[in-house]
Length: 131
Length: 131
Image (cartoon, rainbow over all chains, first blue to last red; front, side, top):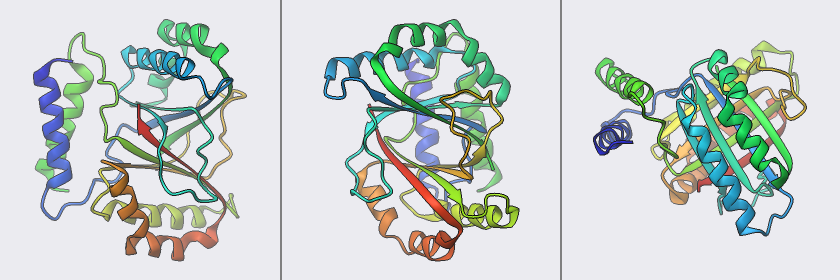
């Protein structure tokens, strides 16, 4: 991404966050969100986690992906409802179901699965449409 | 949100989506994401779902919340890894752990739990820090 584009998006984010008296727009992101949680076969392996995260980052290059967030468990308060047993998380935003379908069938996605699926023992997907 | 702010953010989103040859920035959202999935006691009740979604929308008014997405299961392809059994999903973005803690303790969040927790039988939270 170019510096000017980065700056522009950062400015938009700052504006959104700091407008006096304004609260965040409800559902101010693309409509469809693809949440994925991965549990590694070797959860202690920093190398396997790095490989998985590197693979996930390639997904941002798929043209229908509108935004991404890749993460690891945050050190928030331990509560019964919090599942921090996963190894890595993925959010991909799409405009619509067609965009998500293009992603599913995309060679970059297939290459990610071929390269990385041996690393995880469990994956859970939640696809959510803005409501 | 004002029209001008909405337009500005929409323009930023369009720019991000359409820049020739550019891919989405990796982790181009605030660092901390709070994913929550709810399973209603009465999953067939449109009224209960509407109450839950109305309650969720109030969370956008908490000052440390940087962005939100509230959803329901999308009609994506049925696959073994896809969990579409939940009733509603929530994403809240925060800048950091302190922002998430402010949210947890906030009167608006406490009111949401007091008003709506009788509606759900299960809730799962995943807190993820950008990686």
